[in-house]
Image 1 (cartoon, rainbow, N blue to C red):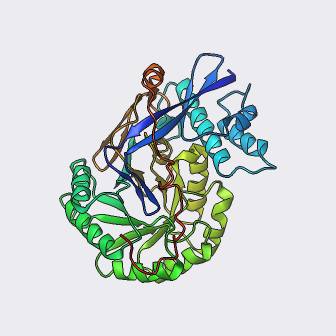
Image 2: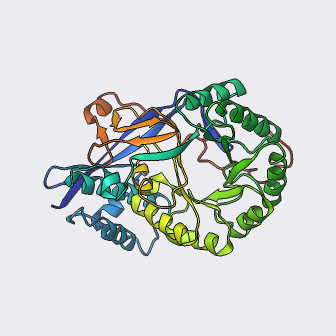
Image 3: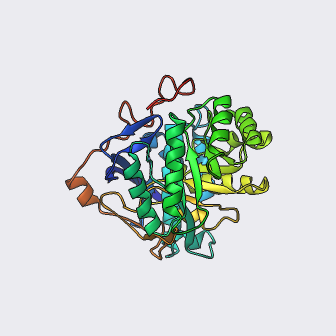
Length: 379
């Protein structure tokens, strides 16, 4: 079997509400979902999800290769872009190809990927994460009430501009989730919007009101010294890592004792997650993949020994995709469909083309000019 080509298309996910974080919002609630389809000479197609603008640059590393050699092909892709580096958009393309390769490998074995990767149980524990910065309080509590209906007792909220508002909302969501647990787990994500001492001050105030499970990305992703300072000053865990593109970028965090919950972005692929999980395990740390459409990395998460929980951002699926999984019982129940269990209706997506707005000017992927430099709360 050989890899012969690829097709690329884009669908949308309609969240049905504004989504975003401290950096910005997508008010329409409609976002793009890029899909990579990896072709073989035997007619089996692999599916990878995530932005892959650099696919033309990465694809020569796998063209003509046997797709079953997934780990070797992952390293071959990294070697192929050696001189100019693999960060950013390039790493996204590598992740999408890697995901499609693992999908192919499991399809050829005629089994779901979680079995191919050695998982014993199809259930993956999760926490609810509504990307909820743009919701008012009533809408926020209604949203997490729906998560509670699905058995969830853990939730992550977005914030970072107004600590009084943030505390009120965390306490409110905790009360909503008490229908499933007397002590729900509450996490808080400020998406790199604080300075070191702001983080220490704000976390101390939060911890007067709530038993915070973790603070996520309190300072810039590369600030190992800052994360270590915050971890030592706080009772809650420090979680970070979703934006790191490559195992090498975690070394400074491990060396400084700067991370308590090791995260990995789902869009960076399965091999990346597996290597990060192994490195975290060697440091006696838990791992938690950060959410994405269709939860593809849940298959790998089911097989690692140090999984803490998986971020689940929505129970709906992108337009034109059918996903063999259930969002119930406080987690993800993976199905038996071969590979990732993602079926793509190309005709439907192409004939009813819709556009998302994830990368709008004021959206969450654009860092505001005053991020980390605010002295007083901002609404």
